[in-house]
Length: 469
Figure 1 (cartoon, helix red, strand yellow):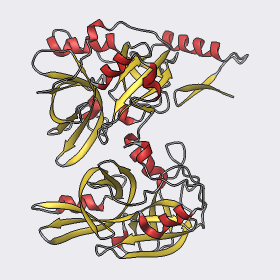
Figure 2 (spheres, helix red, strand yellow; figure 1 turned 90 degrees about the vertical axis):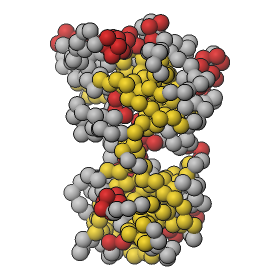
Figure 3 (cartoon, one colour; figure 1 turned 60 degrees about the horizontal axis):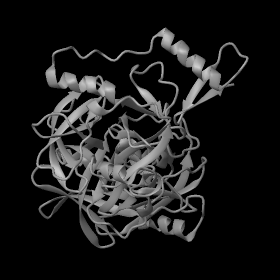
């Protein structure tokens, strides 16, 4: 998804554009069809227009209906008389939310998910669209709930759920709620006899975050500061990957070609691509892996090796031409202070990069091999390479919004890859920092923030450290 293609109004303005949103022009209907029979229908709201489709958020009741259905079932998206094919991209049953991709870019207004303040007793309107295209609306007020407060874009703010006095039926699930200024409030989730439950826009933004692009798109911005040959090398080396469980996308991230063996082309990436989402040391069996190559061709990938302890995976792909490989054994540890994180979107194929700096901390509770940078990436960038501005490969990136972007240096990765090849020595479990290392980290941090206090407490935000007063 490219930022410039995202149709989003400024949420701070009570403008005609916002009023256009409130009129329901972002509302769609998703239906399950078997033959000519409609098995299930719900509302949805468009959140992003991409070059090859439209991303829609809806209620997970669609997923539950899909699981119960049998036979040749298809998803259709209905909007303003148009009927297009839909694909279930991902879902979260625990949160009751699902994301559907309409396989055509609809002429629809996409609601913004950025920061907004709302208070109890704010007047709201709930909108729904039925299978015939008829638009329906009912009004009410927001009501207090445990944790009600400001809700914004991200983990720092926001309540888990909100409530309203709007009276609506079950078929309105997945539709949008707006305030009377046209600001998108959230998605109608489930309903009971007395009140409607709203899934706040901040939570939608959080669950949608790993689709957001970051930094500069190739070949603009920081790409112009690389040597031209190195920019070209990265453009033919970095790929996007996605894993699928049946027809549903499980996870997507970045990877890059490395020299490993002669069996097939090998991509280094994160084991998050196949890991169970509950954090257990298991992979999801039976996943299909697809690789989006630099030339936008899609290839089937095969999981060759993985280490869940170190969050590393190797994916093999055959019949790839005109790609470039990194020889990790030739990569020397480089302590450049200025670094660049690179990623590629599976949705759009866009190559992106963002600049940052290495940090002087490594986090006392993390694997002692992990280092951090201040590069601000989204989950798209997981598994992507970290390089310096001089064209040297440094390591592979992970994701942590609080501490900064974690990465493993290539010389540490080489040990893991050697284990994959030979199995002749036991791969040691990651270890946490010991007391001496933690004391050294505190000494370095204290030198950055001189203070007369004997005991200093630190906090980490977006890869930066602050002294708690």
